[in-house]
Length: 167
Image 1 (tube, rainbow, N blue to C red):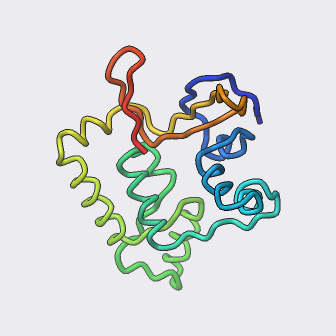
Image 2: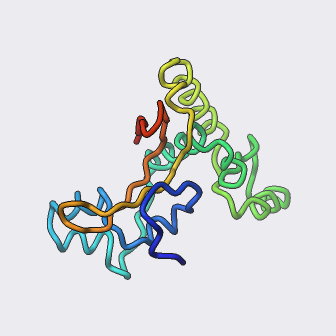
């Protein structure tokens, strides 16, 4: 894995590669504000436990994927057929065939689609949601010399060297 990407904007980097970078991020600085030990435990300790997703976190990630990265939906999610019984032969086969994806209920998808549609119904938001999603940015902080990183949800370019950043 390349840990020394050049300075600038890099679309297409996988989230796992971005998070493995040693650069300082806003979330690291936020936890450092609490304490250095907190920052170590949350971001740097190689034995830190994985964060367990809550239902609200799962719903937010689903909406994020649907609204900002719709091309990733088929590889990330499988909507369980209504009435699927995972104890039957057919249900077990369906679950096995979709084991690599997160299985969601039809009602979860319906809710996320309604939320996405509500976002896109606003012309300003719909316009702002055009442009690259999840591009990774790397730079050196001028005051501290620290290598920094950011991964905004959306970049909406408005002109030469002008961009609206949504996160």
